[in-house]
Length: 300
Image (cartoon, rainbow, N blue to C red; front, side, top):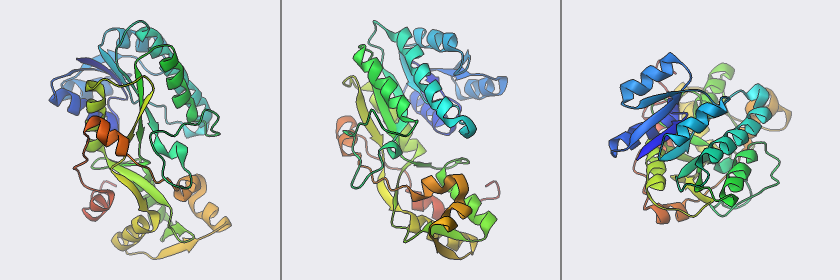
């Protein structure tokens, strides 16, 4: 099938494009610059010029395709709430173009939205969640209620692998380098789920190819939760710096805006997803990537 992909030149998007092309699908990738268009052409995809604030370009891309994978998000954290609202509007615009069809529409969210005591599963929903990013899931449910053939793929907080420059782990490493210590909050027993970008890409393809119920949730989770102290200890070892424990105001001073993510405790299951899609992660674990210098080369 011909698949319209937003965010097609991003860290996860490039892997999804290659996965789709490798399986015999055609890809129409959204590009807002000549540089992005060049990347898509070199990958073997077609180019659709536009961006996430040009709703007409999104609608036409969806209309020209047999399915849509929405991976794009404007990462302007100075206007994060506004960008979350925009994402909901993007989903509605694409949904309008898919009205009256059964074209699959895969939307990207995250398991971290449902951080809680216990394990987050695909059944967890929260319409009134205080986090702004819930706008994405609410917009998806609106489309499902309208009869749009939509499903949500929740990515792990850590999507890791070669080429990761702006995810949780490289940010954690940069702070450790700047501060001269690798820090955890209190005992560091909180958890980050993780998935390799290539395993996540395969999940997107499998979800696209198999019929799903409108509003279905899938979890791109290969590891239910790695304790943060394990990640921090490996970083300390690789950088030859101390591992320290912080609390209260120390944490805020050390991590600044990243504090929320360092405190995140988000054990998440993908049991339902694995069963529904026959998805079995095979690529390296997060700790494997940390030990294999994926995050400690000269380009980091």
